[in-house]
Image (cartoon, rainbow, N blue to C red; front, top):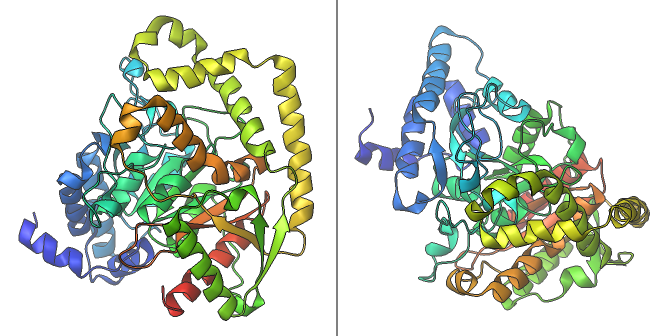
Length: 462
């Protein structure tokens, strides 16, 4: 076992992302097992308090050791090379219960099999480190969990003394990546649950077109909107994880910044920005323009449609899944989550059907607006991570903040689109995310554009 002192020295010398680290393992310069020691030590640290619901340390060590043995005997190393990946406690992992961060599922039996997304990660050589914490049943963008504790925002803790929200619902997943306990985190995104915590931690989160990654074996929030995807440390890691989860090869063109034509959606998606987000976003746009990108103002049709319609769709579908369980386990639910689930009981079948039809029409209208552009760009969320304490104490503040955080990301889910958040803040600033997005099927283009933007912002001074 590597000593703690040696772990700290080793951690400081590592590449910053999964692709770089996998190359180190393939070359023999690093061993997967020693890197897993670093991840487990990070998971044991105060930074990761409440990040996991349950840990899979023994199974993760076995996976990493298998990679080291494969390297020793000359067997090809799979893409994820024995590196640590956390799994949101919505996804079935063979031999483990799936409890959605909820006390109401304490009686859940161990899963018989890995769900498809987990099976693909395992088949690609990931060392699965544990079920990560989340907002109960993935039902908010804040990240608070009264049953298992709320993990602290790791990125903001290094900049000020105010405990801030981790973002949700993939709260624990973001913390595991930011704290070094995992190189990537499998999560879900229904109205922003990957991109919100990624943005608030200064990480990358990619929400693919829903149909590309199977959601079977993932406890549902909304059958219509749920997407299985990942939080990573870089855009190239997002490409790698998407290729594994979607079992497809991403086609990249590697176009320069001067070849990109980007749409800037004026209106609701740019309203209510706090000073830090506004400054970082405007600075990023200026630098992209200076690098040659053509950024054009556009207006989205009926900008209130995504928030109103997607909320009713997810609420109605959540009520359909939970209503029988609530009768028996109501006292075991987070009251705030329970109230949101119960709101779905008032959605009439006719209204639900109308919302689905409106969604299809609206997606077609936005797709028409997207013609001639490589992608849309906007802030991922309009504010930096808010302080935690007021949201624990005040329901009105909680629900208002939740709506604000989910506002921009939910546009993409309502389109069944694809989107990637990448950090655009400077050193010393609280994390800010820039969201690159497109209608359904534009995944490769979004990833390609995001690679160019990430590289260009770094070269231009971010």
